[in-house]
Each structure stands twice: as C-alpha cells, then as structure tokens.
Length: 309
Image (tube, rainbow, N blue to C red; front, top):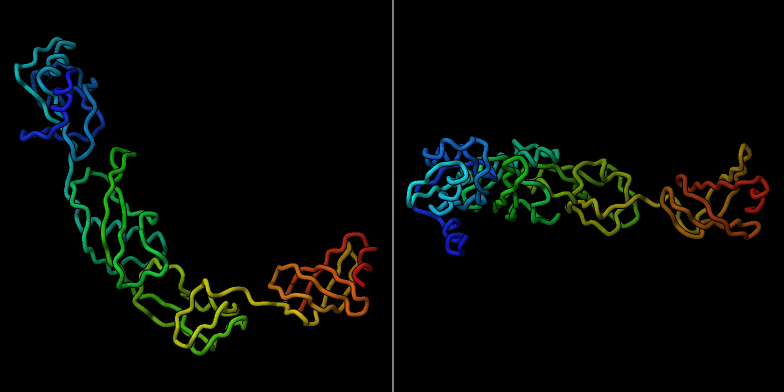
C-alpha cells in the first residue's frame, strides 16, 4: 500500500463514521457502512480499528482489494469510516467513581464533598470509569482546602484502558485526636491527656490518628503542643525498660526456671533484645523485654542458667 494511502486511512474525515466497539472491523461493520459488502461473512476480520478518539478510513483502493477476496465489486471512489463509540466525560460519573474508591478505603463516601475543578475534555469510550488510589497525586499532608490531581481510566473492551484525569477538592467531616496538654517525648499518653474532635479534612489523609486507640499507651517521638493534631508517625511503642533500672529476669531451660534481678544496660520496648548486668557477678547477658521491667532468657541447657549468675 502506498504511503499516501496509509496516511489517508488514519486522517479524520468530515463524513459520518460507523460506530464500533471492538479492536477489529469485521464484515458486519463493513456491510453496515456499505451494503454492497453484505455478502462478506459477518465475522470476517477486515482491518484493525483505530484507538478511541481516532478514525479508521478504508479508501477505495483498499475496499477494492477487500472486495476482490469475496467476489464483491466496490463502487468507484467509495470509502468507509469507522470510529469507537465515545461520549463526553460527565462530572456525575467522575464523582461516582471517586466515591466508589473512597468507599473501598472505609471512608463514608456519602458524607464526602467532591468539588470538580477541571477534568479531561476528550471523549471517552464506553466502559467502567475508575479512579484508583494509585492515581492520586497527593501526599499525606494534604488538607481539605488543597486541590489534588487524580488520574483515572476507562476500562473498555474487557481489558483496554483509556486515561482520564480530574482536578478535585475533596473533604469530609472526620474525627482526629488532639493533645489536651503538652505531650513529651517518651512518656506514654493517657486518655485524659488527649481528646477527639470533628474536623473537615481530606478523607484519604492517612497520617492522622483518628481514634483514641491509636494514641493511648503509645509514646511521642517529639513534643506535641496542646491543641495540635496527633500524627501516627509521631508515636511509637513506649519503653518498657529504661537504662539503669532494675529488671526482673526469668531464665528458662526446659522445665527449669531461674529468676534474678539485673540492671538494664540499655533501654528497650516490648519484644526488644537488650543487654543486662548481673549486679552480683558483673556478668553481661542478653534478654528479651517481656513487659514493664521484665525480661526473658531462653537459656538452652540447664547449665547455661548459671552462666547469667
């Protein structure tokens, strides 16, 4: 096929085009555009279609070649145009797709306020519109007043994807934990030192503590001033053992147990392995933190129990 002919078949045309919904143009499509081709088998593959938004034009030389295969004489200077059936992207469809994603993240989508500031203007193929969480260009610090760009897609023809986007502002009334008083680093937070409040926020912001269970019993990594929202990233498990404190150590070897008092050489949280010193013998050994000022040693052979004394 000549280069000019290839270009002609890909260029838009002012003629009306036959709407299709497949990657391939088949005999049924061609017969609907040009009835003279009705003798062609309905499922015969004629040509590949263009991508959504483009047109596939079969000019007379190509129609003549196709007709020759099936004993059909294409009318001189005839041509056929095909394009995907498309439609404009609707704001209501964008909101519904975003609400579906919010719902999947345990956000009450009916309470979310979605303001669409801009969105794709290209016509889209018919299919399922989705806005996956991976398409959201937002950090955990986004607030309710900050617009975000959300990239989505229309899934059509089973597995093909057509890219779309929307610039949106999303907010919802959510709870967050706020410090009642100054919270100091390393000091476990008690229930009377924090409170819950309702706040208009970006519903997918995941770094804020949303319930008292996220905070109470944990320790701040930095000072949190009164009235400030508590971030989950600013909390850690509290220290159960502090350096220099006396620790009750349980050493186990099979059915045998030995309990001794030791001094912590370093601090540790639940599950941490720390160094301890036997104050009588001066021996240093390792044990796992099991609770407040408690540690455990699995000693192996019973003779090893005496190794920590």
